Length: 218
Image 1 (cartoon, rainbow, N blue to C red):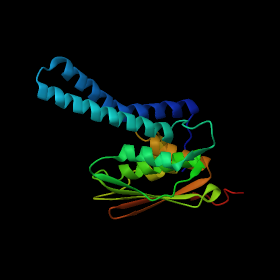
Image 2 (cartoon, one colour; image 1 turned 180 degrees about the vertical axis):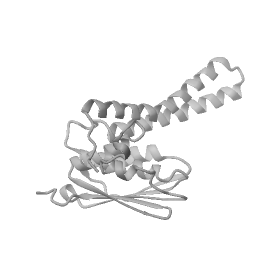
Image 3 (cartoon, rainbow, N blue to C red; image 1 turned 120 degrees about the vertical axis):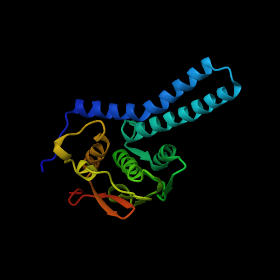
Image 4 (tube, rainbow, N blue to C red; image 1 turned 45 degrees about the horizontal axis):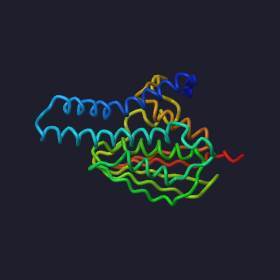
C-alpha cells in the first residue's frame, strides 16, 4: 500500500481541527456554568456551577498545554525539550479517576520531535484503554539511541481499528481526517526523527515501542 501524503496546509488544518475538538467540550461546559451563574439565584446551584467552571477550566488548560507540546512549536527556541515537561502535561491530560499514568522514565533533555512522539504515543495508548487502567511510559538510552515504550493495560484495552495503519502512514482508503490525524501525525513525527514504531497487542494490553530505525544513523 502506498504511503499517504498530506499537503502542509491540509496537515495544519486537520491538526487545528483536532485541537479545537479537544478543547470545545470543557470550554462549552464553562459557558454553561457561566449561564447558570447569571440566571440562577439558588446558592446551592450557584456553587455547583462554580465547581463546574473550575473543573472545566482546568481540563481546558491541561488539554491546551498538552497540545502545545505534542502538536505545536513549544520550546522552539531550542533543539531539546525537558522530558519532565512532557510528564507534567501528560499527567494533566490523563488525570482522571479511571486511568493512572505510571511515568517510569528518567528525566533528561531530548530532541523536540522525540518528545512530541513520546506524547503522541502516550495519547494513543490512553485512547486504547477507554474503560481506564494503567498507561506506563518508559525511556531507555539518550540522544541518538533514545528508545521509548508506552503500554496501556486495562479492561478491554485494544488499539482502535486502523490506528496501526495510520501510524505507518497508510490509512484505510487513503483518507486522513480530523478524527484520524493524531496517529497519522505520530507516524510523521517518528519518521522525521528517524524512528520506527512497533505495536504489540495482547488481551487487555497494547504496547507501542519507538526505536531508532535501521539505517537511521547512516
